[in-house]
Length: 335
Image 1: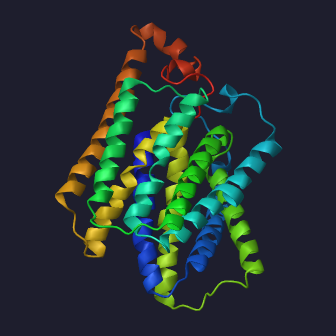
Image 2: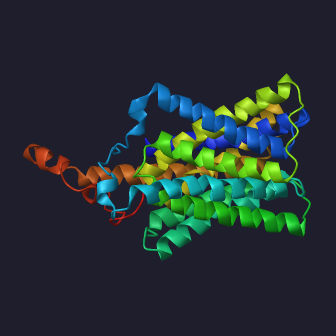
């Protein structure tokens, strides 16, 4: 389930580039896109919480992991971190990304951005949150190599030094965002966490708009339609499934699975924008998907090894600590 949620999130995020291009064609500016995206998403998620109060409670995942398995953290600090994820992390990352997009080709920008899975895995290992097993290392190499082939197969790209710097800064920001989110994802329900992140991002962008003279919202219904697609599909659904998947898989695995995003972008570009996939891109997509299969098979094998050998052990096994269900991840690792 965790892998499927991460893949669904990647697909939703992957569609955002297509929606963004269509929104730009309809007269939407990058500043308007970001402000409307996060504001609308915050409102929609708030409405979900009002309609479904049960979603406000954090629940254990399929492995029995919850906040009780983590070092204690004050509620106020948890809420502040969650709000800061949006106000500082997500708002900054999105702004850097779309600023870079104005200066350089999307394929090269995506290539630089997708250095973040390597950064997440390396930093998680250095912090002691994860272990770089041979299977995970091979999956990371395959996913990164496949992403490289998918993006390089697009053909010639132009290089802009400032754009490349902004893109790399976006990748670093997203790395920090994932690792920080990994510390609070178990302590808040996914919808609550998503509302706080979206509200924080919308607040930062709203303040920026006030100090820069506002944003131009004078565009027609097509523009609003594509903005709605970005807010609902590529933000609300993508965010909820990412947090839910991160909770079950861990930071580095979620980052590796998220490399499916450019594959989705390339496929949708072929179908919607008339772009064609080259043999090199098809090979890259196959590598990314193979890395997903390796990760999934590895986790399935681990769970089978953890199953009790006798029927009378089932009851005691079901009440043990979550680390018994996830031996590959030391205690305290976010997943």
